Image 1 (tube, rainbow, N blue to C red):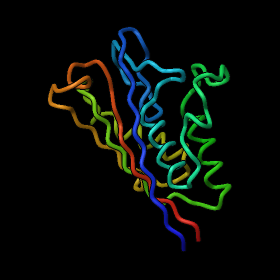
Image 2: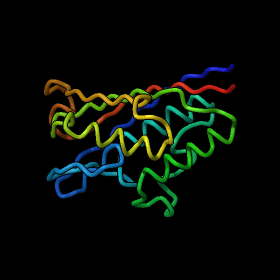
Image 3: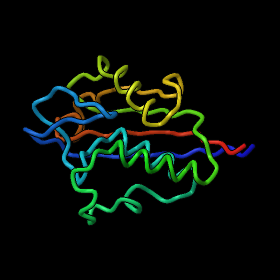
Length: 159
C-alpha cells in the first residue's frame, strides 16, 4: 500500500456585504470572503492538500483565477473535480484535518453541517473529516477581522 500526505493553506480577505461560504455551507454573517470563486477557504485547502498528496500541483494550476469559467463557481464543484482527478490516479482518501483561523463569526456551531456537506461531496464518512476553528487572538490580518485563513492536511492511499 502506498500512503501519501499533502498540506494546503489558503487566505482570503473579508468584505462587508459578501456571502460567507465555508465548508460548503453558507454561514450567517454581514461580511464574507472575496475571491474569484465563492472563496470557500475550507474547500480550497482540501483541494490543495489532496492535489499535493497526489503530486498534482495546486488549485490555482487547475482552476486559474484568470479563467472566466471559474468566476463565482461553487467551490464544492472544484473539490468534486479534484476528487475525480485524485481517484482517477488510483488514490482514495483516508482522512482530512482542517483548521480555520477566523476572529468572527464563531464557527463551532456550524462544524457539524460542514462535515455533513463535505462528507457528501467527498464520499467519505464524516468521521474521516476533522474541522477545527480557532482565532488569532486579535493578532495580524485575521485578528483585525480583515481576513480568514485555513490549513489542511490530507492522507491518501493507493492499495
